[in-house]
Length: 225
Image 1 (cartoon, rainbow, N blue to C red):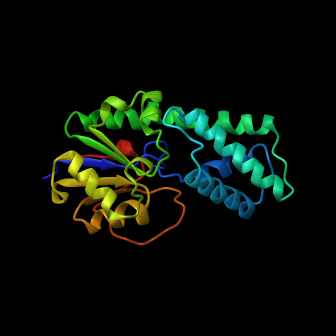
Image 2: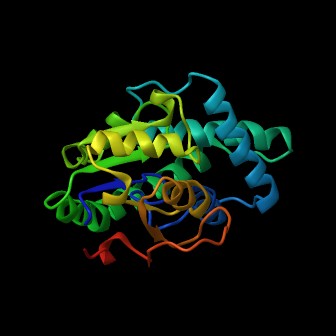
Image 3: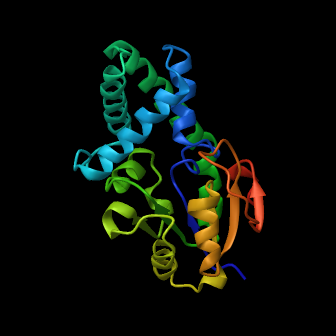
């Protein structure tokens, strides 16, 4: 019997299984000619930079986070001879943000409202320490019992320990908990390793690792218990 839910944010709540590299790639394709290999390098460089430097503060919004990411990507691409103007960065920013906002309002929030009416939900996410601000920004904060955020607890997915912290926050046992996420490697496999049931939101992920979730869905709106 399920008594609590763990859920991912990036690629799960903010999109239907679309990894942020793929989201950026789509946005760039409308306004700039950047080879996939260089864009991937810029993406990885940006994530490492943000992981190693306190650029994002607890008060940084999702909108501001996207702006910072695009600036860092543009800095990297400039070293490779590709100029991404401020105007182009703004265009990509608006495209990405509005897409996320629309998805959350029309798909994720209604699904989470239905789930939270039946089960406590804990967010388990690799994020930058500003998740509470982001949840308030999208009017989602009231739907979660707790937030287990990598930058705050000092443990990152796919370490199973971050899922154990989530289960503890729910006050349930792993066997009574289901983990919902878009990454087989970072969400499904480690959650399974501690005894959780799993639901894979299958979309355009960063990479494919074959595993066997208990359920596979293509949208949060498909979840039925």
